[in-house]
Length: 177
Image (cartoon, rainbow, N blue to C red; front, side, top):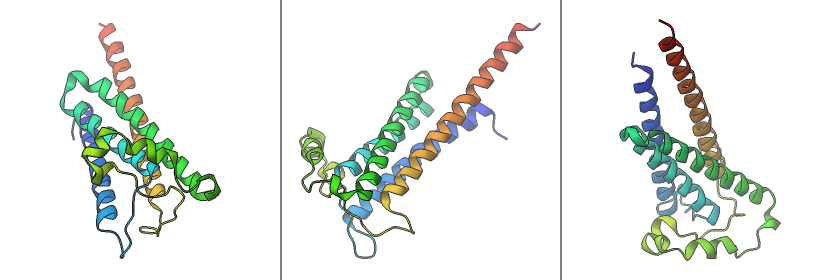
C-alpha cells in the first residue's frame, strides 16, 4: 500500500489526466462527431473547457512541483468552481431556451481573445448555448461536465480534509514526548 502523501499525489495526477481525456473527447465530438452529429462548442462549453484545462494543468503541476503544491491545488479548486458554474448555467439555459437570444454576447466576448485566434480549433465558440444535442451514453454533454466537476470538487474536499487531519495528527504526535 502506498503512503498517504504518495496516494494523494497519484489522485491529483489521475484527475489531471482525466481532465485532458475529457478535453480530448470534447475535441473529438467537435471535429469528428458522434453518430454523424458534430457538437460545436458554445461559449459556456468553452468556459467548461477552460475549467477542465485549468484543473488538469494545476493538478499535474502540483503533483510534480512540490513547492507549488498548495497554490496549484487551490487554483485547481477555483477552476473546478468556475467550470461547475458554467455547466450549471448551461443546463439552466437549455431548460429555459428563451433566456438565450440567438447571438450570444458571451460568444463575441470569448472569440475576441488572442488565444482563440491562435487555437480556434480548441477555443472558438460556434454553437448556441440553448441548443439541445443528442445525448452521449444517455446524458447530455453539460451533464457529463457537471458530473466531472462535482466529482473533482468532492475529491478535492476529501483530500483537503485528509491532509488537514494528517497535519493535525503530526503536530499532536510531535508535541508529545
